[in-house]
Image (cartoon, rainbow, N blue to C red):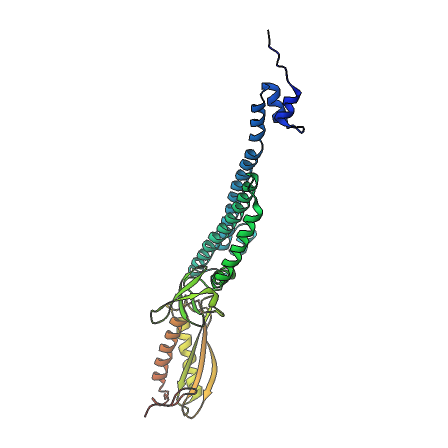
Length: 333
């Protein structure tokens, strides 16, 4: 014979209260135990909600990190597809990213990905921790107030550090410069060796390494983005045949343009701008050429060499060895 469990309505109210939950009622009806009903109601209460919050935060963090990785891949250019890929296929090779640009894009993408992942994970888990503490019965008012005061104090004490980080983020997003670029930061100039959120490290022509905080960079002159320009001033004697000198300079520029060694670096035929300066000491002819980023110095040296050979072969007279140039100090006596 089956034993019948006699349920006391007063004990049900004692176990589950007047607004009894389904789990509490189910356990009490099946077991008749007040302890089991209370334990079951507690398990499906705060612990279950905490577990759901932690699982949800973990899933949200995974989705966020995957989204950041895809975003960084698009910045780097490795995720091009569809319409963007078709545009790249029809883009002239001269307009596409060079290897140096790809390295800059990769470095920028990796740095941005690290920052965004860190910020996203911090925000997600912070909100999850606050909810868990609230479920555990901890008074959040004093805790949040103390955290706010500490945050304000930390912000005032680390204003320069925060400024450096914010400036570094915007520099990376706007792609103002990257590793391998030749830049002028005002306080220092040279080749960029490393870019972080706090500081930019570059090496000047003398080999000196400069560490410039990003928050102190007020202007950026980049000589390595998209294309560069080699500008050469050719000085001849003011009494020389300027038309002949201009012809010789133009022929030297065409020689550099037709050179196999310079073909990869020179993007357009060098242009003779004409007479730039005429004085009692010298006449200056200016020539310029469009080059690949960072190649303006190599092309400039090739132009100077070709022009010097052409002037010597044509017998064009040079200016005196010692004279006072415009804006320069007088020659020593």
